[in-house]
Image 1 (cartoon, rainbow, N blue to C red):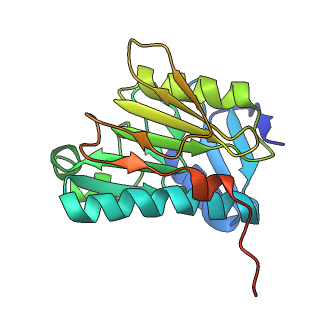
Image 2: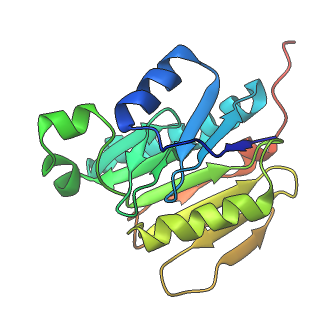
Image 3: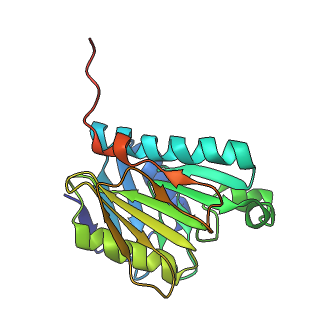
Length: 194
């Protein structure tokens, strides 16, 4: 399960970066009120997240519209939180507007598109609150995949989440023009060697 730690004081970005570097396999995030959330990344969870990031990167290579990030990337959101989506995308013009120093550290922006894949250590309610936080901070679209219920929830600002059961494809237009996520690889079990 994910752990929430109330510290005597919030960690700085630099302290959080050092903590992450010294503890591979754990995802460290900071909430807007300064609490530290620690989630282990299991093998299956990492594999599933990669399936999403891979599809997003393939689409981005064709379109050249932005920059794709994996689950190790932390973003410093406007509300002060520091979150790491399982996969994310930032429009090229927003990324290029950042200084080289901002690009090297925790980028001071919310990604345009965020993807979260539920793992055994995460409660669905926790991930739904995280999706709402992304939208409040400027995300244009959020996608929550739950391999345990084989559902996909699509979040957009000012709209109720769209819940899809075992879809073959999820079109994410107009936010990601021409991109349709195939959630089936995320819902499948790890392949076995013949």
